[in-house]
Length: 117
Image (cartoon, rainbow, N blue to C red; front, side, top):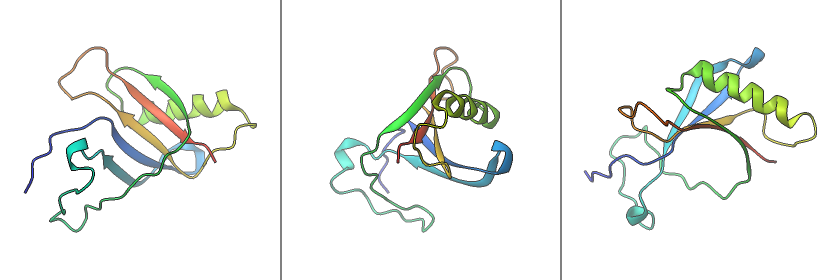
């Protein structure tokens, strides 16, 4: 019953399938605004969970435009290639992040994050 507005980034946990495409299973995460961090309102929908994300170190790449699944998959492949075989990161998931509202036509920011092991 509490309106919190939209926060950035909108973070989607992607689970890569064989060949680099994404599985149909995704998890969308929104940051709880600062004023609600200590005592977040209780969701009335059972499918909504509140979880605390621990600090993490990430490998990241940034790109612009209206991001589609294909863009995230392509930039994840580029990031994987840039990191090579030396970097240790979780390979069973990665984060696709968008920072802008849909009505912003220019200067859009999107990122792919790999979480360091």
